[in-house]
Length: 164
Image (tube, rainbow, N blue to C red; front, side):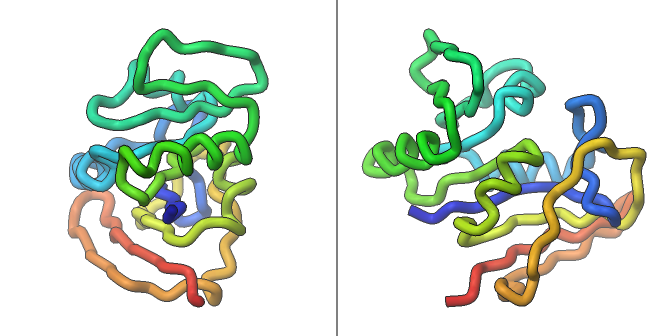
């Protein structure tokens, strides 16, 4: 199984405010859709709640301290990151082997040491954020891909893979 983060950050690692994204950039949203489509996603409950509904064509593993159950076949609640990873491993025979962590900040932080890839959209602007992506030792990763977008605001999509 390949464990990947996918995240959009501002110049100070901000990822959100009041449980919402800082900004909606159409190219970044399209990238998120295309990258995660057909895959397993792991997220915290607040991130799941912020989606409004399950995203089509994806399996949702939601980490919650509350003992919740889902009636939907594409949503599973678990109580910890370890349980989420075990659930994902049990599903990779039916789903692609790349599993995405999509937030929030605490789930990113807890999973960073186990992460194989980081798909990051770096926005060339600073927002009034209250939630932040953890500090990454970028020396542990190789930059595999970078695409610059001349949108407003400017941003770049970058893919980092952990060094062996």
